[in-house]
Structures are given as C-alpha cells and as structure tokens.
Length: 434
Figure 1 (cartoon, rainbow, N blue to C red):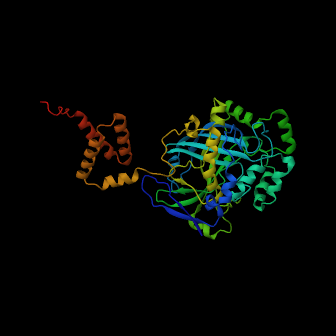
Figure 2 (spheres, rainbow, N blue to C red):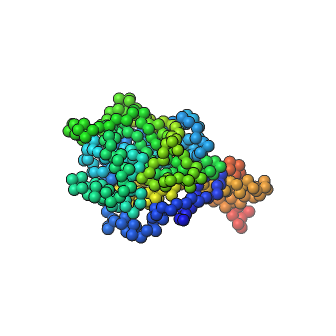
Figure 3 (cartoon, rainbow, N blue to C red):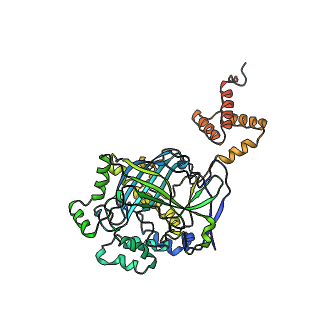
C-alpha cells in the first residue's frame, strides 16, 4: 500500500495532518525515472504559445454562493449564502495551434480562477468529466499524438492501445463531441479533490459546472457550415453574448464522498477515466458563475493567463488522483517555460488578496502560543520585541505588527504600543557629555 501524506488546509486553527492511501502508480509518479525522462525536454527553449489549449477565449465574472456547504469545507469563498467572489474563466480548444477551427470535434478546456480573500484558487478542467489516460506515464505519448494531423491516424494508434481511453472516446464521438459554443457546454474539474471542514474532516469532491444556457451541439455537417463562415466561432459567440448583455451562467455543483466510502467501491474513485455514479453520489448545488465582462487586452489577459492546479486555498486540498499529482509538477514548469518569468507577475495572474499559501497557516500556532502566556509574559514579549525592532525602518515595524495582529489582535496592539513608547522616549545624550 502506498501512502501520500497531506497537510490539510487550516481554517483559523491548527490542524493535525492526516493521510490518505492509494494503490495507483501515479501516487509516486515522480519517483518513476523512466516517466520523468519522458517529460524532460531536450533543451530549454522559449515557447511562443501553449503546446495544448493554444487557442482560447476568456471573460471576467463573479461566483455567488446559493447553498450552504460549510459543513463540508471551511473555504471562505463558500462561507455564506450570497457571498460573491470575482473570477476569470478561459475556454479553449485542446489540440491544434492558434489557427485551429473552434468547431472541430475535440475536447474543450474549461478553466476558472477564483480571486478569493485567501489568494487564487485555480480550477482547471475540460468539458468532459473523464480523460483518455489514467497513468501519468502515458501523458507524454498522448500530448505528442493529439496535436498531430488526424489523417495520419496517430491519435487512434495510441488510443486503441489504451482500453481506458474508451470512456472518453465514447463521449467525444457522441452527439456532444462538438459543442455549439463555449456557452452551451458543461465544465468539469475531472480530478478528485478534497474538502476540509472546520473539524478537520475530509470529503473527496468532484466539481461540475452545469450550463444554464442549455446543452447545444453540432453535427459534423453543421460544424462544416460554421467553419466555412468563421474559424473562431466559439470566440465570437462568447464575446458577442457578453457585449450584448446576455451574460452566460453556469451552476457549480459538487459530488461528495466520505473517506470511509472509498473502501467499498468497485472502482477507483481517483481514476480520471471513471465517473462517480450520480445515484451513489448525487450532485449538490453550490452557487452560480456568471461572466459579465470581456477582456480589454486579449493578449495580456487571455493568452498570458496561466492557470495552475497547485493554487488552492484553505478548505480545499488535493487527492491521490495520479493525474492530478502529475499536473501539480508539470503545470508550473510549463508556465515558466512559456512566459519566461514568474507567471504571478502578470496582472491577470496576480491574487487580489494575499495568498495564505497552499494550505499553509503561519499564524494559528503563534497565536495559540501567545494566548497560553500570562499577561506578564505577554508584556515581556511586547517589550523584548520593541527593543529588538526599535531601530528598524518604520515600514518593517508595521509589517511585523500586521503579522502579530494576524496571530492575535492583542499581540499586534501590544507590540505597537511598546514600539510607540520607545519612539516617544527622549533620546539619551551621547556618552561623555552632560
């Protein structure tokens, strides 16, 4: 049995790390030397566009909570009904370069960035709930085969060697294989994630975005007509709808699975080629995503957006999903290769509020230590800190006071008061002078 140790996210209090288990090879995929060799490029080089998801469209919007799920997660963006969180969404054609046609039969990317008060949460997925492969060792082969000319048959050559691809292929070749537009398709995070509540209880979770516009699709013949008129039909449809005030909406729903339920399942819930049957794990509504503003600068805001599944917030955590574990490693590096500098330096990728880290809580334990002190011990702490910090620039003093306040408001105000007394104290005369 392989074990992944996870530090669950903190919600205002220190929590004890727990463990989760999986027999899947992806849980230790980074130890697979052959696999890592497959993923390493021959020479580093600047990328002018994404290798996959190169052509896309994006828009700004907001997420509004409509149902209470606080018993499952302490994530602040879900903290109360009616709470709104700004977001940015990017939709894309998975394969092909910038000149690919939007109305091809292919998977679409569906990525949403929530600008939460605890930093950015990036939910990266597709318009299908499953994927072609379950083993990260096959990702490189898949990425090499998918963008190639369909006439060569190389994609099918790979897919037919992977029985687990049948689930995705059945969806792709069905009447839903060509969405009429980005507005008329569902979105799925696909991976299994975790919810952590205030009691440090974990539920496995899958995220679903259900279109409020209704599902609309094209046949092959209809798609050819659309392509003959506009190769960027999906981009234009989304832009025009928002400009006309027809703001598209999706309902965010979740499937939840208690940790104890995993052992009795006939399938692996962390296998990305599998779905969770709705009759066993029903969809629960959470809120509504609405897109209401087009980007002003398409290149800076859509093309330089960099979504990263490692960006989570307290109350949301990862899982032993092998494909998710793979993406936690490869996505950050791919973004650095493409953009050439830290992606978060681009305005669109920057958080609207300071990030609390991927589940890291730097204040709960210092706050708990402070509250265990007697009032006399606390006063000594204030005075010692003030003397040590007294010669530092004012900006540095204020920064430390804010850290102390985050741990405990009394801690912060005590240090501030002690520092003010030092500032008001008359300067001592130089040694040797009266």
